[in-house]
Amino acid sequence: MTDFRHLSFWHATVPDDLTPRPALDGDREVDVAIVGGGLTGLWTAWYLLERDPSLSIAVLEKEIVGFGASGRNGGWCSALFPRSTASLERAHGREAALAMRRAMIDTVDEVGRVAASIGLDIDFVKGGTVAFARSGVQLDAARAEVAEAAGFGVDLVEFWGQDRVRAAGALGATFDPTCARLHPAKLVRGLARALEARGVSIVEGTEVVDYESRTVRTTRGTVRCRDVVVATEGYGATLPATRRRVLPLYSLMIATEPLPDTLWEEIGIEHGQTFTDFRHLLVYGQRTADNRFAFGGRGARYHWGSSIRSDYDRVPAVFDHLRRTLGEMFPAIGDAGVTHRWGGPLGVARDWHASANYDPSSGLASAGGYVGDGLSTTNLAGRTLADLITGADTALVALPWVNHRSPSWEPEPWRFLGANAGLTAMTVADAEEKVTGRASIAARLMGPLTGH
Image (cartoon, rainbow, N blue to C red; front, side, top):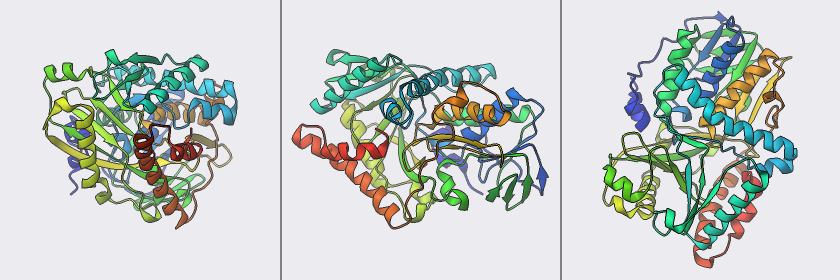
């Protein structure tokens, strides 16, 4: 039997024994069948019942609720969206871009509100994000980010001078207050329990092999329904219908042993704060409720054929790189030990544009393509899909990600070559900026492909 506590630090510390729920026991009929027991599916179920408490809903999960990115992520409940506001403006116009930005900002508080309303202690503290500028090039990028945010007039992004930051080599930073630190496994597992209390059926150990209008086929039976919600994110690459609509890109994390309060005061990261810097090969971190660093980043390669395997979750070279990077940013941690190492796939659309889709004629709904920004965006997806499915005429159904169709990813070998070339380009871009002291040409060329 799988020991799900080994999946991540979050799974190891959630107050839940992670015993799988019973599997589907044959054919079934419901109003709504949800494929995937992560946050997209669970939030959709939550808000569907808010709109129409009479609905019968079944959530179908291959492993356990929160097995994937919803339970393993960095714990950033942020207002970040995969495409920048400037990119959304170019694609959809200024008003649509600003509406999307406002919706994302509101979503951070909505997650905290719902968790509090059902008595979930998810370590939610809205402390904002500090993004360190650790070189002249990064300092220019930080100032440009503050200026861009001011130009849109929605965000309250601040510039912090060198006197306010303590990361090694930091020349300044930006501070975005619209981010909360939380414990993702506590959220996803607690939300599932609250849904069951409201009558939602959640079956685990039930693999979906295919779906179509009004029908979901599993290894344990067929579910017939009025609406199908596909909420598989990176795991959509394993289903025939979505194999080339999403690319599973791996992100890996480490957690340190708990550190004393005196050390955190020296480091300058407060409870509730998340942090990053302006490098191109993304890193992200938080101070956990029990005073650990939970720190992650990209760097693991894409695997041929969009394959997903448990051994891809752990790459020793990437873990070593993360520990070195954390020590470089905060030398005061010395030889603090790493207690947990983990990773997993996130979902990337071909144009790095998340979407929430619904076709009333077929009853097929889906959301995803969060590129790692899903801890909050899943909540907005759930509200949006609930409005679309129930026919509500709200501001959410007019947002620019609604019924957005991203191009399909190229077939192999082009997908393999392109995805790993992008990873290499970001690595090269950081090295290029260190050597030249100027903004990277490689990063500028990759920008349109990564939503910037």
